[in-house]
Length: 495
Image (cartoon, rainbow, N blue to C red):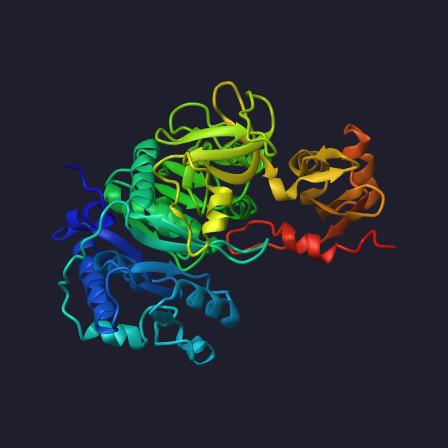
């Protein structure tokens, strides 16, 4: 019988393996040693009073020990709740209270600010010190494995909360394992792969996609604390694969050292978590000979689509649905299925789709249909051959004078203008039109030049205001924060 829990599939096969798993700041950690660390973490959870199904909130820097906290939680049956290290004490307090977590693990620097809501243990950013590490040191490196099933909860990941209260997405063993299995096959990961891991591990991309796929394939990772251009360039000749966000690739393209010789031994570059411009895709191919493989997913679903490993990696698209995932494009108002070529909301169903939102049955019912389809809120168009092109978020749609303006269409026209680095188009309140499109542009270009360059668009699609800035606000995964732009421009037309 095939393994159906994360421990059985990802960890149990490696208990006695001497194969390398991690390279970290010049140190190598094999599979067996890493799993001994995980067992110590599992025992430390028990020593701290956590049992099966209890939640642990983890807000720590990236390190091998931080990864062992995740693996130990899987072994102990503890529900893992990783948090962005940039979250404030008030935000952490909300996540802790909402989840009912029994323990918080944080950086020693934050310990005093986060005290008061219950037990707190610490782990330093480099993973080399802290009270949780001290507790681990007292434990045996063999631990019992909690009884868990494919449909029991493995992790809680909170959405960013840009449109209201943050929601805790409940992810099961089946959700995470089925996705890793599909991606390993689709992306041809094997035990010969060495992954450049420069992503944060509080997010599904770095924690569940990069780490779980590597574990399942019995490959190895070169673990970097963060994306550092020099470190990545130095590592490329020793690696076979890299997972990143678009910013990784644009920064590599800005460096003259990136060429075909540097990437000669690489097998695959993958991009996600934010849209990859077709221009970036094409420039990367011209410089390196590699076509970046773009995929699409979100917190609630892990990965849902991917461009193919073999075949047409189509620039500007996120590929086709994964083999076990059903995808429909539906009318956002009626829920009716739309034919190929029409813009609608992506809905997905499959073993990757989460159980619902923690303690939010009404919100779960609003976004997760009774038939299992999840309403993603992402607007897209699907071609006859199944390739999906993301147009934007439904909440980003601008309705100006009753007419729909899709930001991505306008952004692509702006980004094609000479001197433009990137752009973001948002809708803001307008006393006459209801909403008006506003373009926020990064580049060496004048607002009037942007306006004149958009004459090929219908007048109702053209921005009523263009602002040139030095940079766009982004989150830690490189996504442009349009909610922040809408807030800062909310009163632009108030007069």
